[in-house]
Image (cartoon, rainbow, N blue to C red; front, side, top):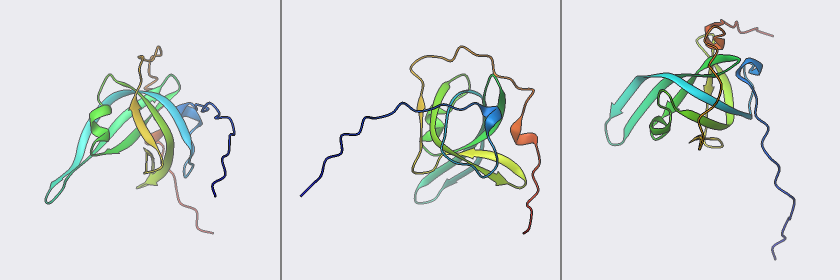
Length: 131
């Protein structure tokens, strides 16, 4: 016996980079890719490429860590739609990630904003408070 739920789908709510906080989850963002840099490239049994991309919107920038096939979409100049992103603190600095529950897609239309590179959220150092 299966039960069908016909709840209407809701439209995603998109956030701005400036509203991102450490250790938060569930972020939907429309971002422009400013630059990318490969940080790890392994080619043993299975090829693995990990890159860091500077991405942002009109409110600021943050470093996005991407893996493998995500590198195809996250290229300088592209506008991307990121869904269910998570913020982690790596070596004291915020990073944006997408795990298996999120995704990154190329936007069908380019964004009409200029990226605010003067507000770099990944440049702010955070200290872990011990409780």
